[in-house]
Length: 302
Image (cartoon, rainbow, N blue to C red; front, side):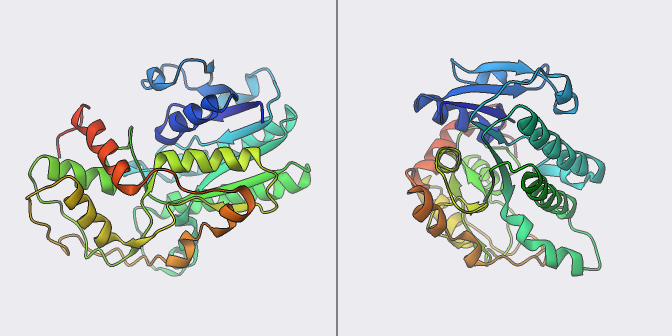
């Protein structure tokens, strides 16, 4: 791979992907929204094209070896509950794939989430959870793009991940919330912690994405993770220990949403076998990087 297009380049994962690609001699063109407040995060050497994905059809076509589509507005926080925004994200994903096809890019790599695995639980549930529209739209984008890629013979990979951690993490993500609370000597409100989790250093996510773009992988779906999933409680206890907090932890303060994850969803063996992936950044270092970022950023309030 010599060149890549990255949408969502100024986001949490996008910035790290751009850094990783550049460090391996790959030229990067970032599709960035007008007036993006995070454009200063992009490393030197990135070619920037200002455009909203809603107006991608107005961008002059240009080829690249790989189109990485990471852009997804409202992936965390309250905007997950906006159904029109979430379905528009799916439409933008399809538009990004269409751009890649017309520009004769050699491969399209989309970024999904383990939450897609929860689809049967959401469909069968007679009620509403805050993550419902997000995962329904992610799954829709995945399945539609998979079919479109088959239709136009476009090499296609859908990568999934779960709970990245590191510099530029969004403040509403669980690991950031816990670190912020402990950093401010407050006890976080958390559930019972008895869910399988795989909190993964964001650098490992970026590394895995690069490999999926570089390597001639035989499958269309890969999970990128830390390789050592454990119960959420164990991660939180590890964070508590790593940052040497004296604030007591109280599990069970937050209501259980009823969703059930599975350790089998966090298997990185296919990525290891097909692309040579080995996680490089430990969870401990990821926590320390996140703590440093939070301590020097503007969102210390809890």
